[in-house]
Amino acid sequence: DIQMTQSPSTLSASVGDRVTITCRASQSISTWLAWYQQKPGKAPKVLIYKASSLESGVPSRFSGSGSGTEFTLTISSLQPDDFATYYCQQYNSYSRTFGQGTKVEIK
Amino acid sequence: QLQLQESGPGLVKPSETLSLTCTVSGGSISSSSYYWGWIRQPPGKGLEWIGSVYYSGSTYYNPSLKSRVSISVDTSKILFSLKLSSVTAADTAVYFCARGLITNYYDSSAYYYFDSWGQGTLVTVSS
Image (cartoon, rainbow over all chains, first blue to last red; front, side):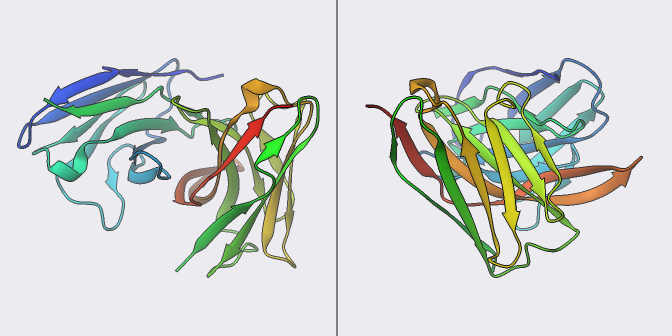
């Protein structure tokens, strides 16, 4: 099974900050990676698919990069609506696995 | 506008079978462009993929749950279902259904991510 490890687990930042979250896969997944945003009591919402493709309707301040085993999600200028938990998810294999999540908190 | 809605008992007794249904509206469950999946989230914890089903009935399950899980699709009723047997308190979670959008096929493998989700339903396992 492919394991996904995110870092950091928690991130404290201010509005306007540039934020980067890292996700590492236990083996190569090419670019078969998605990023989701989840707010309390809500379903996850996809932001990025295929490592760097922006889902329709998602603000351009979100971007993704990486391939193989190391990936990043970047928020170029953190907005009040962006305080949430972020998950990466691989879809390289028949099985799907999520990272453990990164909570972005207000500093 | 696609909508997915989970339904089923909110309370299940230990050792019994958890059964949930996801009703799809505003879209076709029979399209070759999608998989349909179940994901769960224990209170205060992260997301866990349970399994996925194709409109043809082909299924893929999380290896850690495979012995207890069954997912099926009913194209006539435009819904898919989850059954999880021999539940324990560790199966208490919010259960989400989701649509998996297939973006690529290579070597007969479908590459899909979850682009649309239901709101989730809390299932508590307790006597």
